[in-house]
Image (cartoon, rainbow, N blue to C red; front, side, top):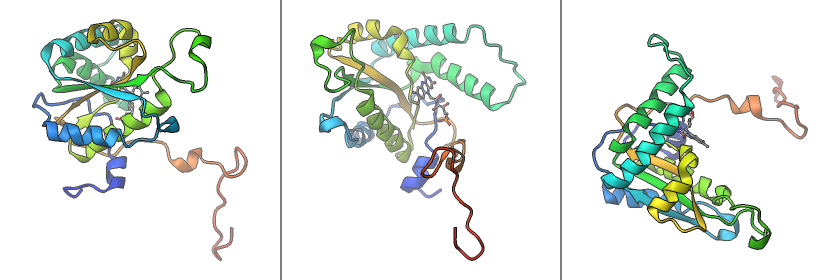
Length: 223
Ligand SMILES: Cc1cc2nc3c(=O)[nH]c(=O)nc-3n(C[C@H](O)[C@H](O)[C@H](O)COP(=O)(O)O)c2cc1C
């Protein structure tokens, strides 16, 4: 791959990078990544996002301790055979690695969203707190992942903070009308970027009616 990957090279190689070096992320790169994030579309262009960049040891440790506890609880009944080299086992190992080293990553980027979704529901009519504008904050988060990859930084979209979000918001003084949509650990990768493994779009695509696959072209070129 060339030094400056093309858009499609970036898209095809932006995968969850969970083994990150502790080396600092230069502010100029972080600024570029955030500038890409805010280019995302949002409902009525309200841009209902805000970013909280955790770089100091104390807030990172607060986040990391709770993230690790939640991850250990989630996988407490999972057994991992050291000889198992399946995709599932490798994913589980990297997931646990990130949880165990979260406090060491140079940046934990919290993409926060205004609690105003679904649009059009008057605040007084809602039951409970509205979610943090997922439909707008997730495109923003994806732009961030792509920009990080383009700049040679590893990142991973995580959501396990939802199990301790109230405590997290209180600790970080996030106002009640905002929530944390995703948490993105960010740093230079220990390993190499590689292609993502996904099902083929053609397996999942129908034309005009659900279930109708694309017609194969005949040798003469007609459908
Ligand atoms: C909505 C969502 C939530 C996720 N939550 C977590 C998480 O809490 N922790 C984690 O390590 N990865 C998390 N991931 C990353 C996925 O596990 C990962 O993207 C997926 O397994 C595909 O892996 P790949 O991108 O390396 O191919 C999440 C991804 C998405 C889209």
